[in-house]
Length: 441
Image 1 (cartoon, rainbow, N blue to C red):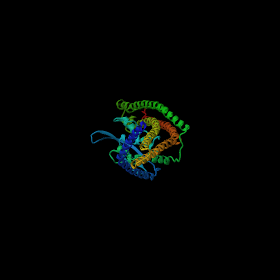
Image 2: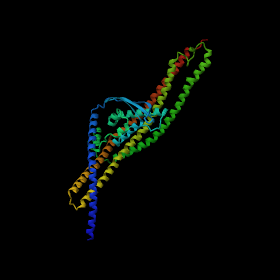
Image 3: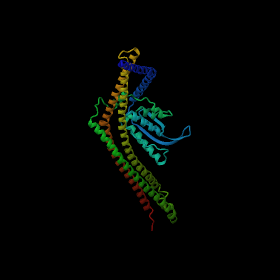
Image 4: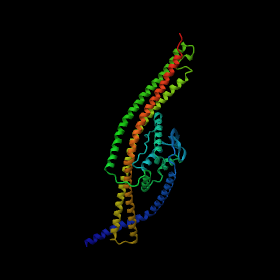
């Protein structure tokens, strides 16, 4: 008798649970139907956009430039900076003004869409950058868009080529964030298409070891690049001081000496050297040397800074790859809850169902199938990303690092040669002018 009472109690509890689930299901049915319709609409829109982008000839040369930082007043009288982004690609010409926050939102969105993959880095956020800070930001933003142009599946993504480069809406951040996010299955197909993959296997010990080694490499390289950047910054500062002293000596000191001391001793100004009215080429060469020297120092410093940020960006890719496992874990938790709900429904009437309960059972079973498909998809997506990293991305990144180092050393040598050539030209002109003005005895 005690057992029967206990069973009745369990049945009442289960009946209550089932009725509550049925009530919640009825309340959510219309919302679910609306959500399905919205997803179908977004899916159709996404397929349309992807179709348009597939028609683009991505071999067409890309020209893109960030310039002209300008201060703008908003309607609330707040001030903010905008940067002109203009150029030409396979879709034609474009010219827009973008805030730094819009660059940032774009990159964050791409990180979510392409987990595990390298997304070019941006300079740090700054509050009201001015002077050298602003010039440096413009240079680094140009490196960002240049790197985007080198990765065609990022450049010709809807987020970048259609919205960031061409949208005329006021709130570009909101527009980027509101774009339909690709579902897991469509993203898998996109990955397979871009990287020309058919099937992939579960990561083996060698793949995991390769990823772990790459992470350690990036972290160690970051520390070394920080030191190297500090040294480059110190060298830049020292050479800047030397440059300023040189031009102060030739641009002001000696010229003042010629005008105040030598000029009263001579018949006319054409007997002077640095302030000779006929020595315009010498003055132009000195001015060019001053500007060119500064450009060379900034360029080397920017290249090292970009290398440092690149390492951080690649590490971010590894972190976003791990987010796939976190999402998979959440879906697995949801799957367990659905399985528990199904068990309660099955126990409720000892396997004897009314029409409403049968519908509930069928609905939960469909949800379980969908959740299991999602678990399998996230597992496969993780394997896919890992395969791309270990067979393509890591090797390419290492190759790019070698090429980047080669370019830094080459550019440094070339810039120094150019500066020395200009300096030689300055001294040659001074010697020539001085010889031509030799005082006759």
